Image (cartoon, rainbow, N blue to C red; front, top):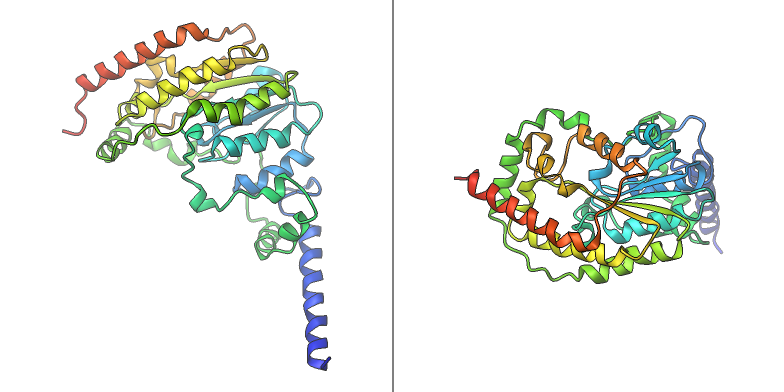
Length: 338
């Protein structure tokens, strides 16, 4: 073996050891240990495993961007809990299930607050293009995890940002977007968004909601019967349900959800779409879907009430009819894009 090859091999090994050692010592995702002076990463898919592994909690919040404005301090005040928000913007039900499976490996978890967004259960996942593929190696730890995590230039970049304190140090409200968008809650932004989307093509309801609910949700309910599940349907605005066949998709999902989970005593469904006063007030939204911090706080208060009774399965058809009539009257009254 030539001297050049030996020198290169030694150099390569030294660089590799420095990379592995440096990333392990800094551990920017807190995967191996909790940091006394944390700098949190806003990429939720890669940040969550470290939080689950090394933080203490008894209540888990899981969902999409519609759950990002849930401050754990507010929920804990209402529920007398120790909660952690593990919502992922644009996440699919499959991804949310992976988060819950990981969280339930920890002792002491009593409650899961899970956003039941029909778009998550339809297989749509608009943020994957931006955020990359789901990091399974962090959720299903094996011998490859150190290689993918520590032997990575991406992790090195996160380590550098950590050392220079480039990031947020407060976990509560880490991914809340309300402050950056609070000037958009004027009603007009919803109208503009609605009119842009109105001409989009109609999509057929090709997804089997029953299949996805039974695949991603029901197994977690049946295996973990000692866990209390609060399943909430987020109050997307009336403008969302007025677009193309979104109302039909939602009504199918709503009926499937209630039918599948109706036999589980450890489950409570809170259906916020039934609050027509909220979903009909466009000033509470920044676009056709995303509601204000005030709405989020009211939802947390509602979900914390132990005496709140979920709607029965046989009442869902009536609720769907109410929503259908409400949307129809709203469309007749509001010709927003003329």
